[in-house]
Image (cartoon, rainbow, N blue to C red; front, side, top):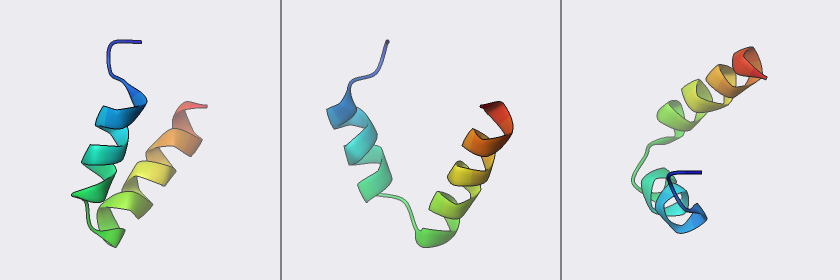
Length: 31
C-alpha cells in the first residue's frame, strides 16, 4: 500500500467529524 498507517492516522486527525462520516460511507460503498 502506498500510504502508511501513520499517514492515515495523521490525515484522520486533521479531519472533522463530518469528514469522517463521509469517509466511512465511502468505505462502506467501496467494500
